[in-house]
Image 1 (cartoon, helix red, strand yellow):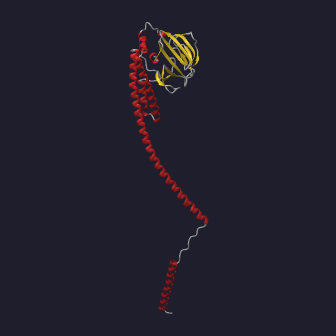
Image 2: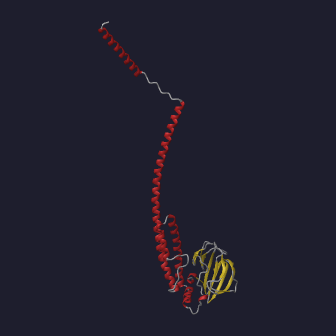
Image 3: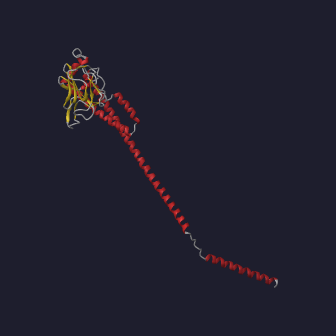
Length: 320
């Protein structure tokens, strides 16, 4: 075989090899891929992983939505809270102004009755200076503190209204005029026989005058003042005199009555124990009983009355 024939044979062989490779490539392209078959164990793992991803995604989405809603709600509540605080501050300020005006009027009426040397307001009702101090303290107070302060001020303002209406009424009463006369007639009335101290240290819980009876629930005239104290608190005679009653009296419970002379009589009701007897002489400040809740009473207190020539008179007129 000469060289020419070898070349021809080589070319034919190359063509044949190329054709075979092309056919193989075409067959490889035409042949479908064999599917990947997962084992049950691997399939379960893939399924669990996918489920976890879905659950985590759902939880994150819910948390985001819930957080967004909560934030919006909290912001709205905070705005409402601030509005309520402003309303309460305004109400507190208004009540304090109301208290200041009534305090001034109350003091003017007291001076008209007692003269220029009139004392402070009844214990438990506060003073103008005290109220202003509380106003400053409330400037940064929270909701509950402001609500409590507003309620307390409203109660005090109502008590003050009753107080100065009573004082105004007393100015026109015969008994009130008699009290003024007594206070101006120092030669006739001895300081020791003139009621001039508190029977107990406490807070006035019920004023003199018309009120809704805590027992009957109907309007009635309260002939004295109620002073709230703890059970067993010593009760003292507000002036020197002679004990005319020391025993049980309907409505009053255990009652002590003292005649101070010159038409002045004091009464101390609802005591738990009496420490004096009828006919006994007592001096100003002597302990005559222990406070309690006997008779028509809803809790431990002292019912204190002052009577002038048999007529009930507002005890506040006699208190320092």
